[in-house]
Every structure is written in C-alpha cells, then in structure tokens.
Length: 219
Length: 311
Image (tube, rainbow over all chains, first blue to last red; front, top):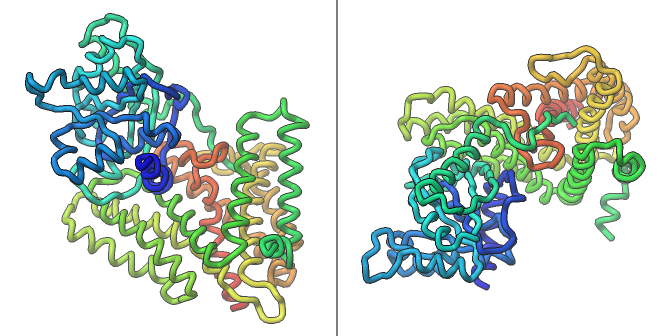
C-alpha cells in the first residue's frame, strides 16, 4: 500500500514528468511474472525508471535486486529500500552460513514476481557497459521457464550520476529487447548472449536505427 | 458554467468554436470517411492535435496564473528536450540546473508584469551569471562552447517563448475591448496554421525546395501559399486585435515569414546533432521542439510589434 502510494505520488511524477522517458519496444515487457529484467546500471534512477514502466497497480510485484551492504547500512535507508522500493537484498560477499546468496531471488521468481537485476553488479561509468556477473545465469539454469528481458537505459547516468546528489533532468531513453531463455547453453554462453543483446540495444540508440524511425515532422 | 462562458463568450468564442468544428470535421474525415487512405501517422497527428488544442484552451485561455504555469511547463519540456539532444560535460550539470531554475523566475516576472526584469533577466543576468558559475567549477576545456549552448537554449526556449506569457497579462487596449488573451489566441492560431498550410500547400503544389540542405521537405510553393493564406487570415481575424486592416496584414506577413524561419532554425539544431525528431512526446508530431519551433520566432516579434503600437 505504502509502496503503491510512493510510486503513484512521487516516483512516477519524477520519472515521467520531471525527467521524461522515451520507450521503444514496450511490447516485449511482460505483464506478469515470473520474469527477470536485466539492465545496464549507471544511476539510482535506473531502478525507479524500470519500475515506472509497469502499471502502478502491479508495482508491488516488481522487485529490484540490490546490494545488502549498501542499502541496509543504516536503519533509515533500510526502511526506505525494503518498504518503499521493495528490494531483494543480496550479499556481495556471501559466507557459507548465509546459505545461497540468490535464494531470496529464487523464491521471488517462484512466487511469480518480476525481478530487476543489474548484471554489471554496480553503477559504472555512464554509458560504458562493464563486464557482466553470472547471477542471472544461475537463476535461469534452475528456472529455465523464466524469460530474461534485456533493457538498455541511456541518460539516467546524466541526470543523476554516481557520486552526485543533485538531480539535473534529462530525458531518459529506454530500449527493451526481445526476451531470452536459457536452453542449456552454459553459464558463460548465456551471460555473453545477454551482454550482446544489451549491446545491440545500446547501438540502436547510438546509430539512431530503430524499428520505428521518425519521419521528420513538419505539421 | 464559467468555463463555458470564458471559452465561448466574447471575441475569442467564435474563433475557439470554429477551431473545434474544423478539427472535428478533420477527425471525421481521417478516422471514418477516408480511413483507408490515411496513414497511421496522420491519425496519430490528428489525435495529438486534439490534445494540443485541449491543453492550450485549458492552460492558456482560462486564467492568467494557470497560463504562467502552462507556458512555464512548455519552456521546461522544450529546454529539457534541447539539453537531452546537445552534448554536455558532467561539469555542465550545475549550469544546466541554473538554467532550469531560471524558468521559474522568468515566468514569475511575467506574471507580476515586471517588464524591466522580464526583459533583462535572461539576456543580462543569466548571461553574466552562468560563466561565473563555470569559473567556480573550474573546468576550462569546452568552456566557451558549453556556456554558449546553454545560453542559446535559454534565449530560444525560455526567453523567446515567455513573451507569450507576458502578452497574456496585457490589459485591454483603450477603445478596442481586446487584450492579452485575444492577442495570444491570434498569434498562436496563425503560427500553427502557418505550419499546417506550408505542409498542405507544399504537398499539393510543391516543386522547388527552398532550403534543401536544412529541411528537404520545405518548398517555395508551400512557403508562398502559406504566406498569402496567413496574410489574408490575419486580416480576417483582426477582430481579435486592435489592428487596422493594414497593420493586421503586416502582422500576418511577418508571422508567416518568421514562423518559417523558426522552424528551419530548429531544424538546423537537429541537423547539427544528427537527429530527425527532437523527441516523442507528441505521437505523430515528434517532440515538443518540433511543435513550438515557429513560436520561438513569432512570439517575441509579434509581442514587440503590439507593444510598440499599442502599449
């Protein structure tokens, strides 16, 4: 309830009006889980943008995976991350006694939730794709019926880069690609395919070639 | 009831009613009569026109305070589209933030009718402030280009456009019974019709390209057709203004010509950056820059024409 209100009154106006998004490929977005959204990561805005792509009534079922050491470091931030955003915290330095680090993500997918994962692992340099971690492949190997939807975000790193507290609005480009599935190709292969898919989306922004091109508008 | 009275009473009433009737006729034609001959894009455009007309009537025609917020928001969306298009350095984020912030002040000065401040806030104060802020940041490389880009955006999308907002606050001209609201409707209607007519004349008669390197779809025939049509319309709609017939004729002439210039100047920006549309805010129209480009030139020119003659 609180999460829905938070998104309706604060996040959606911020993402859709203050910044503004330009979405291509919305048809690839699933309307129900289980599903993994895999995107590049440059800014705290990324999570809010991806969550705003879903109708506000469904936002409770969308769960971003986030680093426990960062988001649970103090009580206020932990309350914000867990109650308002609804993150699934994972440990970046797991120990044996914690159990499998992705157990909670696994559980969320089994409950047919939509899980947002940033395979780069951390916010990198704006507009530069870092090597991917293999967590996504671990998940889909055990849950091969889950779709992985690649998304490329451009401009969020300009609006709110790492290490800056001042939000300066720019329009954020969102490119969504066709979903990928795990078909026994092995971890490394799957992660490479996902990386390629996101790179292709990145190039579609750079080169300006998209499935529905503008026509030069006069009236 | 007061809304209906405000929109459909007085001198603006018949004009607003005609706009809605014509748009309805076009909608019926595009969606029902000639559905199979019309592209998806044309249908999107007509749908977007309804939204534009609706927002303009509610935003600009009802209340002066609402109009300040409405035009301020348009400036904000346009400036944001522009800043998204142009290359920026990370250190420019600070002056871009100031640029956004200045919109609030510009429209506030317009709303309180502080003419002196309204007219120098961006060309003088922001012009002097932004380079100083860059000095405090201390990044010397690209200083001149980036400061110039930001200032240029402010002049185009905030300063120029805000003349519409100031115009709406103008009181009635003695002895004519028309004021800011009628003048804004007159200007916006003629400017937008000029765009549409350039397209329509160009599609039907167009042979010779007028600025092939900048905007390949624009033709001499489209320009001249719109120029004469708008000049005539400007005289016919002169009851919205305090103008004599020849003052209205001259207004129509420069609105048509300068609207064309605004359009191609924004095209220059897009060609320079290498994009076709400035955004996708309005389906079938491109971005908001594609819609307001002509107003950037017509608004300040028309404002100062009226201001010099009657205020």
